[in-house]
Length: 226
Image (cartoon, rainbow, N blue to C red; front, top):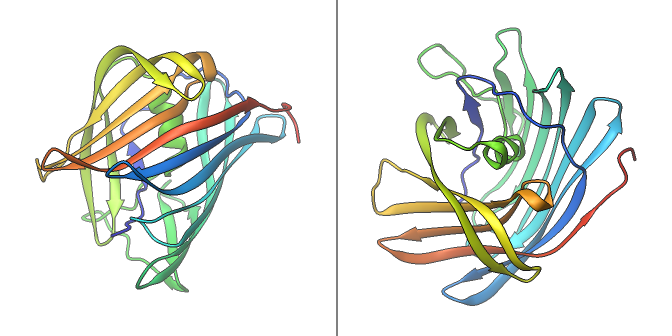
């Protein structure tokens, strides 16, 4: 089942300036190809950036389209608006997010504003920006996801460097393992510093059995300004 993941950082670390790119991925389930996707980062104006993600992955749904914007000020990422459209197997979702006065996203899903309160705060970041933060971290990172009707804290444990065989050759990567309240579920992420920190592999498993693997198959840097 697809659930929107909107992460929240408890403290904003100082990051290296973004590197614009376009990357393409292939998805697998139980070793069988089951979809593909694309992720790009472009610069629309000085200090203004835009993430775009699209794809179709069989275990998640029929189609995903995502776009988010952010600013880059004094070495820190300032989140901006986003919109996501998801064609699920049983339900379609269209979500938009705008930062409100409390620096929490006001989220509208299929035309209805989702509740926001101190007991259930909406997060301050969104998925693509989370990937950038993890790509540059060299220590454990704690994030908060808004999943459906609840918000949970997650620890991404830094595993150090790992040489990873990819379609682009052997890459030196930084690896994270995400914990989960359900210990049977584990997600692992690999990021390649030599490719600007882009995500090159994702593995999600249940009861020790991989059910989703996403691997990079193409990467290219792009012009700094569109």
